[in-house]
Amino acid sequence: MHVILIAGGWSDERDVSLSGARKIRSALDELGHDVTFFDPADDFRNLLSIAKGADFAFINLHGTPGEDGLIQAVLDKAGCPYQGAGPAASYLALNKAASKEVFEANGINTPEWQLITPTQGRETPLELSLPVFVKPDKGGSSLGMSLVKRAEDFPAALDKVFAMCQSALVETFIPGVELTCGILGNEALPLIMITPRVGSDFFDYENKYAADGAEEICPAPVDEGLVRTIQEQMLVAHAALGLTGYSRGDFIATPDGETYLLEVNTLPGMTPTSLLPRAAAHVGYSFTELIAELIRLGLEGRG
Image: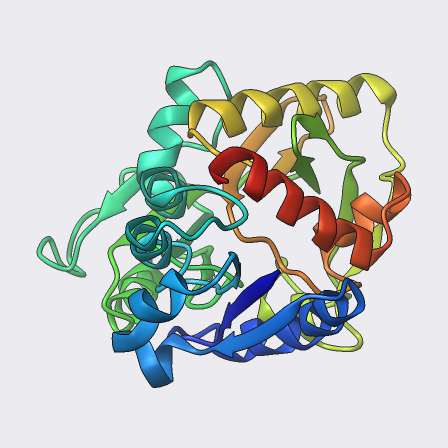
């Protein structure tokens, strides 16, 4: 097949996208596909025409464009199938406040939250008890995130988000273990436990991508009942958001066994050491086999 590999883009997560694309390109070559690399940051105006001549598009974008559904909408217009969620589901999942409303409507715990817009401004009073996380309402890789423990630090945390031209999602800090759960097709993958490196307050950008970052244990050494609970909740969230193909959700499990879904990622990291590929490897998928399966699922849903 002629496959367009779409990566790069103009978000703050561009470098992460390009890093994953190199591994995906190798897998696509190994599978025998004719691959054209496409970076929307360089040639967006030609995406529609290029997509019309392709058999499939493999999207490896993070942030916007990509996770906001824009690229998927153009590909739909071109009649070019791709892996993962469609435009509406992508945008819904990317918007943390909107997705939290979906979680709550479907009986899934999520930390108490407050959305603050730049129009409301930095003087907006905090409605939640400290400590709280303050993060961009749309975005990933923990960029722009702050853990606020003192009221006097709250306005500066809002400024940090507003400087990124984002609304701010304020979320109650829930102490516990961070666990991530991937979905592949209609199956929940094994959980991965994430332990930030010593001295870190949370799973920030450095923990995710530095060589000496967080410890990630797969399968997570937790009770089987907890594993089943999180997997079931992730399957419900995946369906409620209208996602297809694959996704990955981040959870907190408290010491007393309560679980909270933080957010869902529709275009998970795709290097061999990324979280979803690691979980897929535990159930028998090599990285190349995982890429092949994502293509199969995309063709099955949109071919």
